[in-house]
Length: 72
Image (cartoon, rainbow, N blue to C red; front, side, top):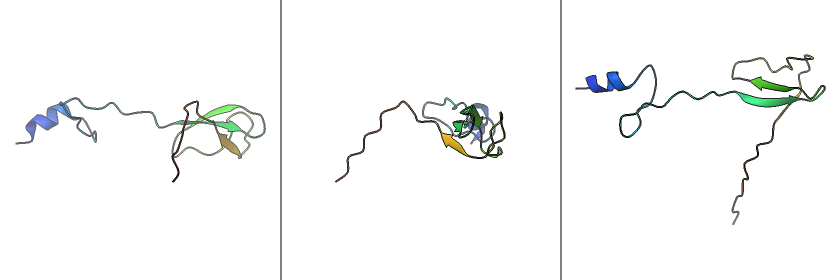
């Protein structure tokens, strides 16, 4: 009964409407070091430390996407 899903899905991927399987996205984020201002790409489970100088205070890079919230 579910044999058609095994051909479409690979691993733990969620099926998409229409039968196309979604490609896994990169979950890394860009953080900026508070000491040397180096841009670090950090993934989940990575150590929170600058790759350039070893400083442990990192700031999330601000996105360019405009976010507007309607507060009522």
